[in-house]
Length: 191
Image (cartoon, rainbow, N blue to C red; front, side, top):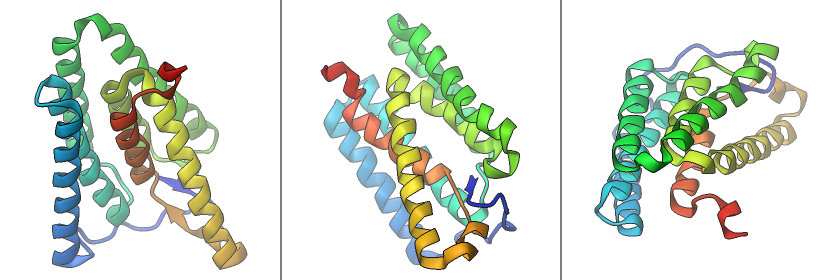
């Protein structure tokens, strides 16, 4: 989670949006999974990508509602994704591991500098993202940071100085950047 001022709100009730929000998030997860299966095929790449997308949608909902990314989802998902990547793409083992650790460190350092601005759940989620997209995690983190900055600026513009006290969850932005990377890969590969 990122905060404009470091203030963290109390957790909300699960599925605060009600039944419609639950159905909408399930539909989004299913559509993303299907689109990734079409994009990558029914092989290991498609199945891993689809599974990651479903997990990211679930984590985004929890982060929006409760301002936390639960270990019970993030940690097992990280191990499953990393194990699957290494099993099916052993030639990229070093990439998966370095991307996971590098992404986590990229968010860990700012958390150390300003602990109220980001939660440790975001750091652990970055570990999952690196395992999921490998070297494209840099692109993913760039997109996530840019999207969060745009939303933060919009909040400040709308609410003025009072908007600085509003905490926004960073998990959905990380998920967005990673889902784009799951479809697009690393843009540096195009150069």
